[in-house]
Amino acid sequence: MNRFSIAAGPVDVAPLRARLLHERAGAFAAFEGWVRNHNDGRPVAGLRYEAYVALAEAEGERIVREALERFGALDACCVHRVGDLAIGELAVWVGVSAAHRDVAFDTCRWIIDEVKSRVPIWKHERYLDGQADWLHPRQTHPAGSGD
Image (spheres, rainbow, N blue to C red):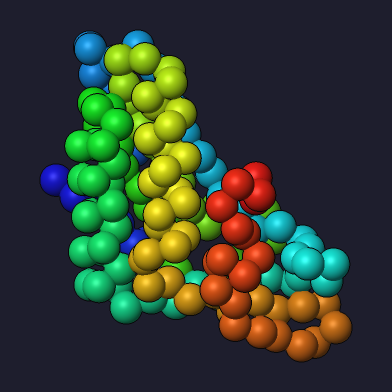
C-alpha cells in the first residue's frame, strides 16, 4: 500500500481519512495545504506544480516511513497535487492516526515540513499582474512560519 502519492487531479480526502481508521487510534490529525490568493505581498492568480513523479513518490514514501518510525504513529498518508491549480484548491493533504494526539500532531507537522523540503515538486506561481515565477517552498514557507 502506497502511503504517498502524486495526484494529477482533485483529491478526495474521505477515502484517505477512512484508510487511517484503526481501533488502536485515539487521535487523527490532518493538514490541508490550499492555494492562496497572495504570496510575499503579491496577488496570486494560480499556480502549477510539476514533479518527476517516480522520484517524488519514492522520496515521499521514505518520508512517511521515517515519520512512522520516528514518532510511533499508527499510520499516515500524504497526497500532493501536480498540474494547474486555482485559488482555494487543495494542493497537499497529510493524515495521521495515532494512539494519542501529541503523536498525531507532531507526525503530521513533520511530514508536511519534510515533504516541502525534500520531495522534488516545483511550484510555478502566476501573479495577477501577468508575471510568473518558479519558487522553492522554502523561499516562501520556512519551517515554523505557519504557512
